[in-house]
Image 1: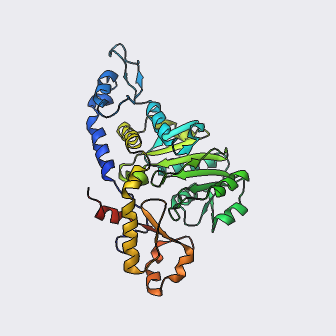
Image 2: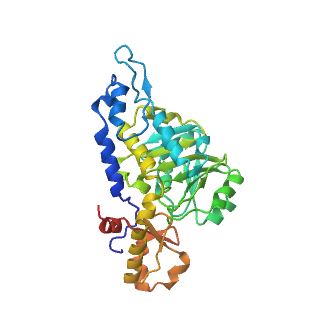
Image 3: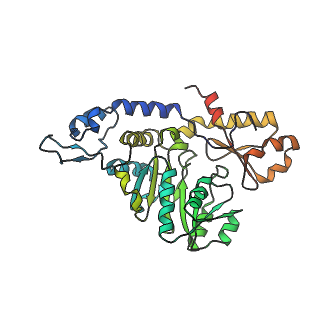
Length: 346
């Protein structure tokens, strides 16, 4: 192993994220959680954080409270604003009728797989080295998992009875998947679930989700903002209703949803990448110089990778050092999060 380099991608909690999380939490009054909490009072408390009041109100308790009460069972106001922001980089996100918040993307993936199985899809497909959670969940649900060695093989063998799970940027190496791969799958009638968990942690890029064979889009704020440990910021956009997620209108954390909204509205999707790109580049340069390696910066900020064609240039000693970072059969991926923690002054 290379000191300070992980073979699993852990997020980096950015200082800017931490400050926003604290500001939002400190602004929320106890009465926001009361059934009879007046929206007028809560709006005043949140006015220092949000220019426009993000919560829905109800008149359910109007005989007790003048001006309406906070409706925490309705998250549509917050989700509409989150969707508006993500629509800046994902087009056309509004075409997906059903939107569900979750405690990160992982539980949403499980619900989606359970729904797909109930609909008659008994097989999913991925690329070797992809996010292991797809296959792990599918196996537990009794689904078959097909793993292809390359994107070329995947297009040639695409099956309309199989649902493809594709992360973009890819968990394989942190780089963007070429748009023609996804388009080719969709044009063959293959159903695709697009996992954009790394979206927002790269240079400006627009994701095309217009093809109707893209059944769902998964988003996560863990990688771009570093909120993994808070279990928040997961969103599932689906063309069809996922019945098992109906209860998420109640089973959610209103504080975390407001924090998610504040993160996207204040930080956007490329500010942190631009500010901390130097950490990725300088860390990789230092590692390459010390261990004579050809690691390149990935499109995703926290990751570096080695091109398969560059492996033969590495001597035997250092080749054994990078074996733990192998993804699939020929890709190497390196997580730089400890270097961010060492180099950034919080």
